Image 1: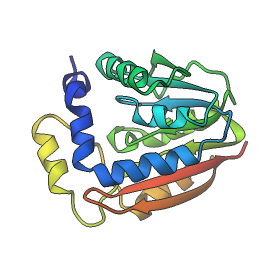
Image 2 (image 1 turned 120 degrees about the vertical axis):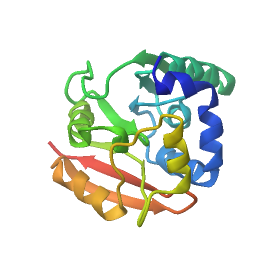
Image 3 (image 1 turned 120 degrees about the horizontal axis):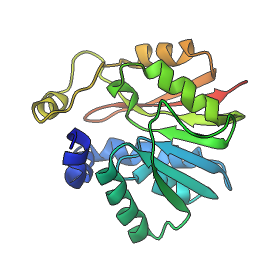
Image 4 (image 1 turned 45 degrees about the horizontal axis):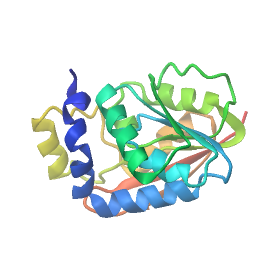
Length: 200
């Protein structure tokens, strides 16, 4: 069992510690989902962004590599009455969908965990329609790693990189998938909510 399976039961508590940022991120991301959209949420964890997106979307496919996270996401969706969500175990680098399947693709707070974040971004954009949105909020730290991140490292959390807002924007632009817009959400651990407007 890996780190994410192990912490699934307390993941929402960890989110609550940085609650102001999570709430604003979730609210802003949900408002970017077009009404009636077909949405894919990758590395969804316990499904907070999927549930928020489901309020505007026609359907949401909520995916993660962790079975325990998906179990929690199913329970949470049922509690919120979000019955337009389906749950699948998927790898963000090897999505099984055809090109241009989704109106909107979401991958929240995962790119800093990956060895090849640009590869993941390109795969997310591949399954998005031309003119669609890829929403990729990611934690950033401007000067030094936040003490909470250092604390999380002690229990096995292993981010592969730390982005500043500038370096995150640069990485997304270099993917060459479309126009990038970004908003910095300030708080205990800041988050850059970035949107790629996919152009094919």
